[in-house]
Length: 576
Ligand code: ATP
Ligand code: MG
Image 1 (cartoon, rainbow, N blue to C red):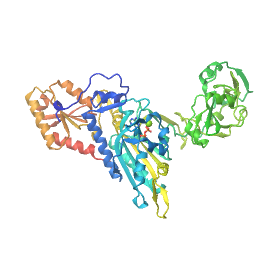
Image 2 (cartoon, rainbow, N blue to C red):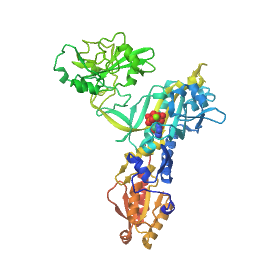
Image 3 (spheres, rainbow, N blue to C red):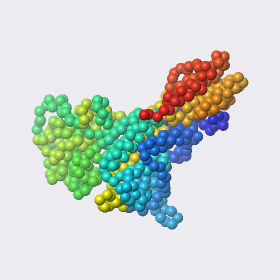
């Protein structure tokens, strides 16, 4: 490609709306343009890279035995009502009525459509296993679209679905996808941390997320610095707690009520009573079905509602509303405490049990209790890990300190089981003549988000540093002075040779200054740059510089193509 014929609108200025590097660089390098909040167009260079990611995904899906399909984005709401997710999806799902007044949605994901599709087709255990996938646009009316294509309202996802006759089959299909994901991300130049994850609205049991560590990531990875443990923030367990020695040097004192008029938040109580939030017991009330649950955590820690939900074995958990709190505790919000609460299931985090002379609400308006000692002044029904893990907490596997890191989620895989097949009637006739629901897995990759994650992981002050595998062009040829006939002609000749050798190359034949050409080359981030100048011509050489090297090397002109081919061979060979 010749730059003079290309469409590469690079920007010198940093766009003000872009908060993070990948977003800024995708705009500046002319890869994407915004149409509206969370909605982007891909320009030629951005689309080339996107297609390369898609090609890697296709090759690895094929290797894993998955078959490509294309499912409709336009879907009848009726299908979502049948699966039970129509109300659950909330305002994130784009809903409308067609001209016949039929309720429709734009697919945010495709479990319903694929299950309904195979329901009539995969009828016998002999048809299994099958894994189908597609690469398609998803629509999600995100509450906060941001960071460019990392969280957008229209994005491209690779979603795959496996169908097996039983759990053992699912385990095999799941592992195959897991392995394919590792290869895909490696080939895209990403190093991922795989974490145990929550299943959320997808449902099902086992689930893993593929995370790219990044300072500006919206997600959080909790991992052990010493062993292999890694989990999402929602899922991360905490190991054996050790009592804080400082709080144990003093012995238990007699409990005492104090006036705290209108002071109801952890922060304000801790200021007024001059105790650290770590000495407070936070008391939170929840409704779990018909049961009320009291959760106790330290004032400086947060309840993890998923953990709590599992401990109390409830399907759903909801915070109690103020009238309910008043009814159960006898006081308004902010004055609840575990002392004297009767007949309510109380769950305390282990850190609460390690407190000595703690402070908590008195279940009376404008009053708190001092010197509350768990075990002596109240006894919870259950002591269990019900809070979010924090940096420094003990690892559940080895006890060493956990780290908490920000990350970008690029992929998510789930063992769904029979959740969709049972409600949508996708059953097979098994060997024993019985009808059984298909056992499913689902597997997503945010293809457009991958592009941004790669840039987030590979850039410097001057611009993007593309991995060879997904660079829009792996090579740019830069004649430093376009007006100099011999430089220009030499560059043209090299360009023709490169094309003949089958290289993907961009020739910067613009009549702009050498400085502008070099700046643009660095901004866009071609992995290799061949520069031709008066000096290189005098030496019958060219200058080869890798984007990630600080200095160029002079190589004989006659070896230029060969050197480039060697580099491409080295960097483009897939992992074994
Ligand atoms: P998130 O927690 O980031 O919202 P999710 O759990 O909703 O993601 P899935 O439904 O599992 O995501 O979708 C599969 C993949 O699609 C995600 O791992 C992510 O890479 C990508 N993805 C999800 N939402 C978006 C979005 N709004 N914009 C771009 N990519 C997205
Ligand atoms: Mg989401």
